Image 1: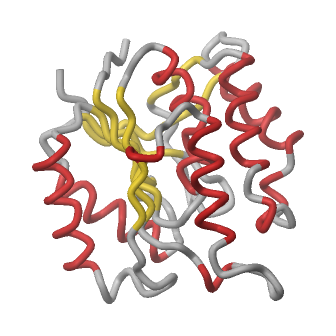
Image 2 (image 1 turned 90 degrees about the vertical axis):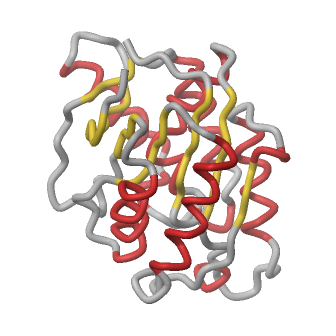
Image 3 (image 1 turned 180 degrees about the vertical axis):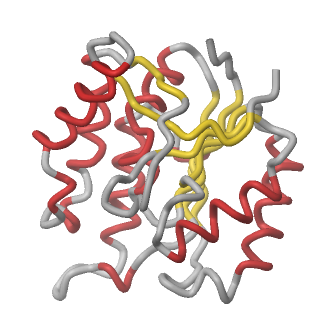
Length: 210
């Protein structure tokens, strides 16, 4: 059993954390854990034409609130999308500061098998910054070249509903195929079936410290 009371979620872009581990966040929050959500880019470049420049930021706070995270526990940096490899040293320094300030006992981040350059940078620098902490790499199938399902967190129907509600908050991103509710439900059912549970999210167990 993973017991964590002080959790840090590292999202390369706004919404990555919700897709990768949204139901698990809701579960841990329901169990009384403190969760800090850090997004490294406001992703203004990803906004469809005609959207307000602050729309994604507003959606972020609505989505994290749906998962039970207070606004004060949401941190947003403004690194440029697709340029994280260039800025990796600055990103690492932000992470080192977060580790010193927050002292998390569990960190969620992208998997090292994620092919998106920004996601991979967060995974690589995140492992360096938090290597003395338990780390779970979350699944984003549309980016994963492969994915080692070495850890599963069983979730409830309510946890899954909270995840889906959080993702629905991102109205500016609703055109993305992986934001489809049926897909989100089917993935949770599939991962649950692998370990004899009704619903689950799967993770790459990158480090376990007990």
